[in-house]
Length: 154
Image (cartoon, rainbow, N blue to C red):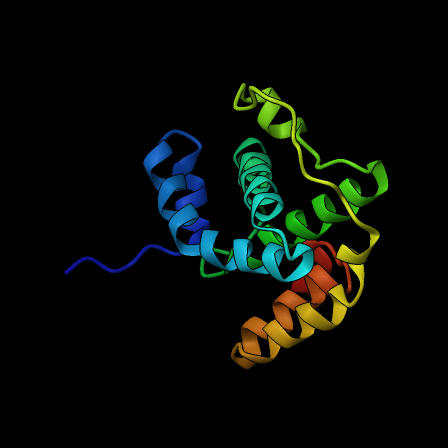
């Protein structure tokens, strides 16, 4: 039986192989979607934000700087958190990545609310508590403390 590839390996392969990105999507889509459902309490908004997160990740896949054995979770949840904040600031769900990929055909009908950001840090910390020590530390440094990968490595 073949060993399961790491997230970093999948992202490296995804530069030329869409199936590798699909595997990464399948690993994290439910967790990203659940994050957005908790934040927005709106299924349609959560689906749109999840789609935008993975569209943005697809566009940025060549810039992923994770270690070979590292998780893509901090990177993906960083994208998710930033998209949520951008959408609240703009008063509309961010659609830039999906538009670049020509994945958007109609206007969003979701009302964006400031309340989506209330307790976001607490929600992320709660999710982190369910991880092992190494994963928790890496995600906290990248997503919550907003350190770049070089700083985390040091």
